[in-house]
Image (cartoon, rainbow, N blue to C red; front, side):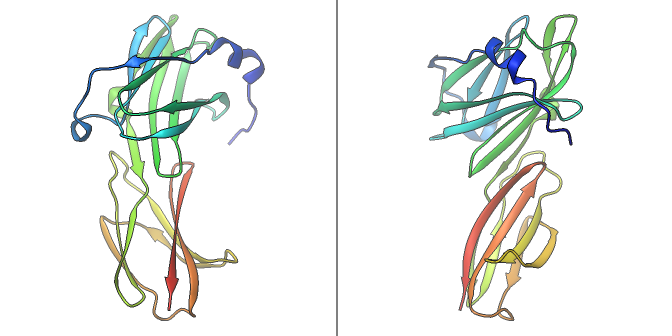
Length: 200
């Protein structure tokens, strides 16, 4: 994946303007980050997740080149506008993430107008890891439109102990491991979440 950025030409043209409180939407029935077309090349970003705090926002073109990086400091019901006038025609992916949340959605610019692919929305939340016995853990997820989330278990030195894909309700028995702290690392696309557990 290319690491080159075009921030020098694009960043200045993408001013983030925080708007007032938007109308409330039911959390379970909507996308947690909803993109709404507001003008020819302007997109409103609505946050429907309570107490989001800070989201890192990245827009990449189809080649994986980062064309915009920014931060939204928002909470539920607050919206922000992105001005995409500096972007040429093409397809882009916008992702929003923090330590507990990740979303991605495809948008395209054609003939100077932005279009949002509503069916492309993907979302992942930090999986819940619960002890269900001595050195036994159950992992549950709450994802939307995410087919594959990988899971790796490592020790604190980073040595890999387990690698696979996560199912809806996965259980792990770590009794064979030496006592100590271990990390569950969950990855979807280019976003990783970590959760630490102790083996006795």
